[in-house]
Structures are given as structure tokens and as C-alpha cells.
Length: 364
Image 1 (cartoon, rainbow, N blue to C red):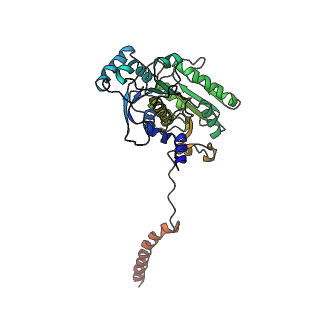
Image 2: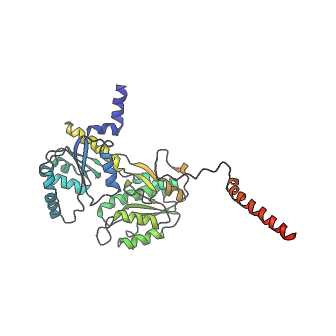
Image 3: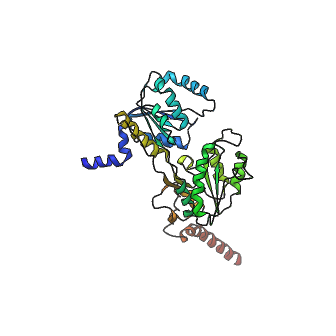
């Protein structure tokens, strides 16, 4: 029994998380909760372990530069300057930059773990001291393969992204992943093609989504800025695209699942947070060079959307999670269809007999 529990603790992240006890500061780069931040918060502690206390701090977007960070520091200092958490989890690049800058003042010598971002340069990690992280792995190639696995007849893939230069490596990965399928399908990046390179705003995005043919697919990559560089509601954009598109919409993280998109091979926030919790525990125990190669993304689909597009469930990958299952049909009555007519028959029979009796009296 002891051996079984030990093996399970090594293979099951949920059991390993029980060692992440104490006060945890969870810094989000977002300004408010969304599907990703909620997923990360769920995965950070083992179930509802009362020994793990998570304080979520939504930092917002660092558009104001240095002054923005100073304002955040002044706002958080009354609660954190005299309080050292057991671990700091930085969700995204803004959160990780803030944690590095003010770690000593706000969080003491607590270990800092990043997630939701690419692996930083070696020099940045070294300057942070007890820092490690979970580099974000996106299933671009697997999601493109999933598009054609579910609908082999797909004739066009419309990839949606904003003008952020950081999206260019993502575009290159999509183009490489599409190469084996270019004999039967086209790939376009609306707003980023020769002769059509002005970018997109929310109105353009809506027009593009509405013009995708039924036999196509939409790959929603990232859309946090419009073509003028102004921030937009990315969650709202994803919902709008899913609502207007006649074709299924695929994504790369679980942030947008449940909003009408079909799914994809996605980075799951809960998985990232579990790995981050394990790293934090190892750093607290003096593991020193604790590191992670990232967490493999998982195939997840919305079963209700799958049914709406008439895609057979037997086309799903062998290992695939489903959300929003389709409600099963109501069980048929034991009497069958005839049972529905019996009450009406019992009501109609007395009326028929009464009419016959009245007619018989009139004949007499």
C-alpha cells in the first residue's frame, strides 16, 4: 500500500500538489478574470486544500511603462510589504516582469514561478534568484492536424491574429504545419496578406468571420490589439467569431473553451498551474536547479459544438477530453407512440357516445 501511494505521488500531479501549502501570491497579467486565469487558479492548489491559500492579483496591461509598475507597487505595498508569501506564481510576461522588479520589496525571498509565457532568456532567469517556470507549449501542429482529422473536406483555414510582432513565430508555425495539407486547402491570414496588410479591427474581424465558408475552418490565434494598436476584449472577439462563423473555430489555449469554439489541442491552465506548484515546492525544499520543459497540450473539444457541425464522434483522437456534452434524448414511454393518444381517446369516447344519443332522440 505504501509503495502504491508513493508511485501515485510521483505520477499524479494532484497528489504532488499537497506539498504546496501556505500563502501563495498569484499574479495575473490580465486586468480581470477570464477563462485562462480561472483555469490557472483552479489548478494551483490540490482541490480545496485549506492549507493552500491563493491571493489573486490582477495587474492589467503594462501600457503605461515604468509609471504603471510604480502605481501597482504603491497599491500593493500596504498588504504585501510586511508579508512574505511562500511562493509567487507569475502568470504571463507582465506578471513575471513585475515580480522580478519588486520581489524583494513585496515578496521577500519567496520563490517565483512563471507560466503562460515562453521561456525567458537565460540572463533574465539568472537575475531573478530563486526563479523557475513552466514555458508555454502551444499545440499548433497538432491543432492543424485535428482540423483535417475532424473534417477532411476542409478547403480553407482562416488564421486570425493581431499585428503584434510577437505573433510572427506563431504564424510561421501555422504555415509550416499547413504544408502537408496545401494540396487540398488554402491558408490565409486576413489583414496580413500582400495587398491586404492593413491589419484588422473588431468590425473587420466580424466581417471576416461571417465570410468563412461552411467548408472552411477558423484558427483563432491571438487578437488582443486592433490595427491601430488599441487593446480589445479578446474573449469578446473570440465569442463573436464563433457566433458569426459558419465554420468551426479552433483555439490554442483553454481560455476560450465554452464560448462556442470547437476546441483544439490546447494548453490547459490547470495543467500549467499544477506544474508550477510542483516547481515552487521543489525550490522551497532547496532543489536549486528546479526546471520544467513545459506541459504537453491536450486535445479538448466542445461536444455540443461538435454535434452542431455534424462531426462524428468517432473521428476524435483516442485521447481527447470533452466539455458540454449533448443532453441525451428523453426516454420513450413504455406505451410508445400509442400511449400519447390514449388520454385523448378516453376523452373523445364519452363525447362520441353523447352525440349518438342526441341524434337518436332527434330521429324518434
